[in-house]
Length: 363
Image (cartoon, rainbow, N blue to C red; front, side, top):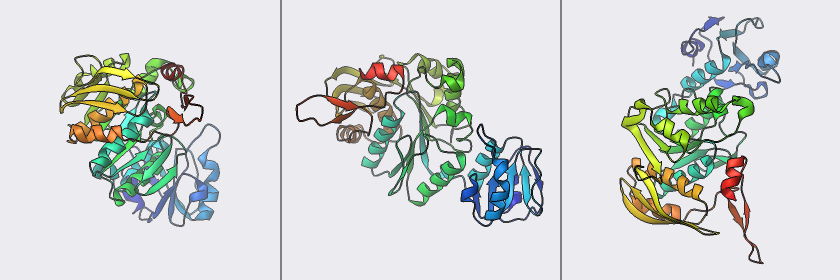
């Protein structure tokens, strides 16, 4: 793909050098540059990508994306952009052919519950013969490949590459955890979602966001038109959560909103919740019918996660009995209230519980 075509996708960019330079690969890590590659010199808190331009050129980079004020080595074309990170996101989406347009990407955000909800969505969709990948905290599943996750939400370049790989692996859908840091760092830019899910919000990442309002505003961005693939892309929101109530009140979401919770007004709700040491049961009341459901994990929060997954599946036309069966037979998610067998009959669990609210819910 010609450098000029990629440069056209970056607002406020200026191109220097040979505009017809052919780009065969993309990299933001100089160690991963290949001949004919485009290198992104990203600014950072610990180091700066501009320090590695010479190394990238030695590896075969023929062009560099950078922020204003840099001088490039002789013969190397460049794209000067106001923000190298947004430029990388826009260029990666173009280079890989906007793969989210050909996939039903389900974005799941919130302080707690993202991982379990993503696995529940995957199991529901795959039970309906809709091949579904996963991108999240535990691992990335792309077709038959399982990749150790480096971060919850990958860098935009890695994300677009994985979405393209999922498309090539004939995945119909992909369940993806969306972190607030990923949104703030523009890693999601260029990705369009068939549905977005809000689980809950409690104190976390305040070293990054400083205050809860900023944290909420970042999460809220996922539910704007910027990330909706179509006008009917579903916004699925837990309105038992106070921040979920605020989000669901947005007039712009009303035509595509599905609410979940325990309140009688919720579109997808749980009644008669029963919890034991090893299981949860409840009556699911949905627009697609009602059914009794038993999960092989305990916790009221897992009931909420299941409701979110049911809302995703129901909005995609999957029959409620198929969803109930998939959730009832679901294997425990690694590290998410995962029960450890004990010969003495003691109840031993492993759980991520990385926040005060998460620990309180587990206990």
